[in-house]
Length: 250
Length: 78
Image (cartoon, rainbow over all chains, first blue to last red; front, side, top):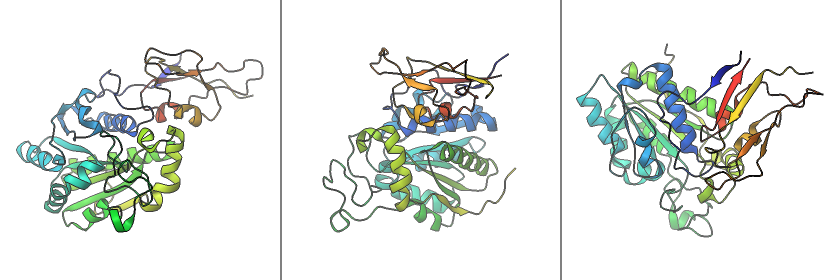
């Protein structure tokens, strides 16, 4: 008798994602839902979606969800966590959200050591509004507001938000992963598991930065976009554990 | 001769035609369908293994489902 070994996770609703073909958000939603199911914390989890492509994440996650104004995910998550300390609170934010308008909130949440998990989806552009330059756009990368490529003198260099947050004293676990290949997807899931376990143990601020493909705005096929992450994007944003004061968790 | 151990089912109405599964399948068992689905994409389609030679068979590794953004693939294993 054939056994079903892969199916829709429990905490993902049966709805068709509105994301473009090959979008990394869809894969990351699934990974988060799988981790919540495996750790058996879905019934007491509250998610905070951002402004951006993932603004409708509450249509897909079958857990309690809030909604934050642009960039304020970490601030809203702080309030929720302080009011309901027994809940697991995560914010899910894009790069325009967390690294441009929400920089202050994020850095201060990390510095205070709030016991929340932040999922930072880095696709190097403002996806929802049509591919404008984000703080994380690579040098030389085309976007609708930097035709001909991002120039360091005119547009500044990409921001390394995860490294900045690693300096903050309250952060305990920061890792950068990608969803560009089966190997990296599995690695991302391990990182998410550890981040949620960090919060369950009450150790402090954890953040997972995920390099995610945006094939439509990069004007590539999904397969090429995944390859571009591995070949080009990881030169600027290397995949590594940036800060780990947690050690091994059961 | 490899043993047939797995089976995948692709929901063609959920597939948006990114074809990441085609790139991921180690045994090249997924192809692009000739017919459009209701969203207007050419979905991915599972091809049955060659029963005579048995060298192109699904081993149920679930790599296709792992990379599928739209949860269109379910995997079964013996």
